Image (tube, rainbow, N blue to C red):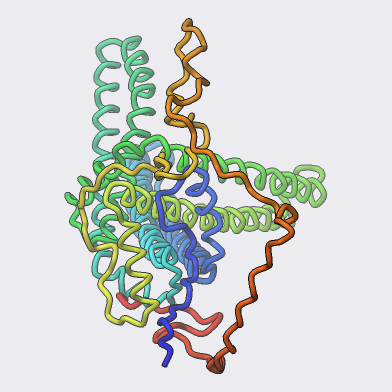
Length: 450
């Protein structure tokens, strides 16, 4: 009997290679990952962004209408009119701020869905929106709390700086201008530095179920030594979408101006001109929402890829992912989440291109001189040491005697009888066997840890 080795089908590649990533790979895969699951990534983001925009806009308009319509019952120029006007403006601004924070919290949910989807896509798994939501649900309030806490801290800092500028302006006006300029110049690099150092905190909350304090510490540690690659990826993506938004807004500006000119050439506010302006404004907002949805998905994808790369380099996450893929494709079930194993593990620094010594009996590594010839001479020394033959004589080969130099009286050796070939066993019939748990071609791969 012949024992055939067990066979396991090759794993489908994910959206990123399972090893430390280069700058170009992180930047390119942030855009190409959108094709992995566009219905979940782009469709969900577009629906959420549109609903949030419509709800926030309608609520702000309703609050402004309710507050400013009170002015119709008051006489212009009176103290009561001025008080109601100031109160209406304050109420509208506060409502806009609160509703803007609520819209930002909804946007954080989109980011969480994208991060979980990228984590599964890295090991060639594609889940439905319901499965992604089940994994995000236990930490969604923690994620929203982190975002609100970060926003509140930014508001407090900005408010303190503005109060200081106002206080200086009351005492000395020119000093207030100088202080404001210095504060703005100092805030730009500080904001960018804190943005990158805290970039991975949401990913730590989502994938590791870390608390807010643990997530801040994890992000601070993981970005150590990877600040500039992460900064480059995030800034380039922001610049790309900013440039695209400017390019797209130009045709709609011309469209709005052209429609207004054609419908109302005299400049009078006719109803048809107002309708044309509203249509152009709606088209512009629709395209803007689409670009914002794509930007949120790409930036969230880049954040997740940077998180995976940092953990590969600091904690050897690629080893855990490779082991998980091998066990999953071999048919194992109920596997642990690879992103929650060995959190904080320290590994030796990676050497991506090691130099190996040639084994005995093999030619030396390309680019290195043979050991017997020594090292090349230093600058200014005579070139007699490099290139000298070795001290020990090289072994010589015995002279080869060609077959035509055989003596005439020598008889050729009798040919030995070849044994009769044994009956070979028949080849095994091909089978259609696949590994247990391997999906059919084209089928979505479910996650064993979901």
